[in-house]
Length: 121
Image 1 (cartoon, rainbow, N blue to C red):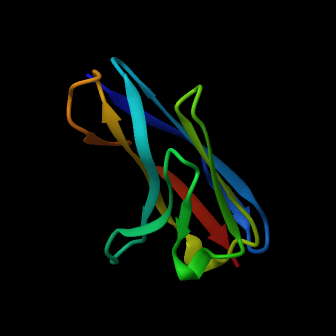
Image 2: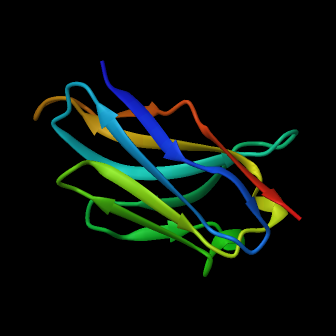
């Protein structure tokens, strides 16, 4: 079984920076798209940023120019550098990876359990 584990996050003052990372464990053949979502209290979960295997990226408008998503394909690890953080960035951040466990298996999406990011004003 594949597990996805996030690390990083924590408490930071507005204007500060934090970094997140995420890596899978278990039987993995390859990882396709890697994405970060977040969910703030009382709000729906939203896509923050995504990165394809060819390194193409996409960002939510609210984080463009402040967050940077990157990946290491050799380590199947995704990173997100969060700069100029705002109180409204406070949320639980989730990593999701599209994983194929063999060369012939379909893609399955695996979610991490989330990591808390809190930005104080």
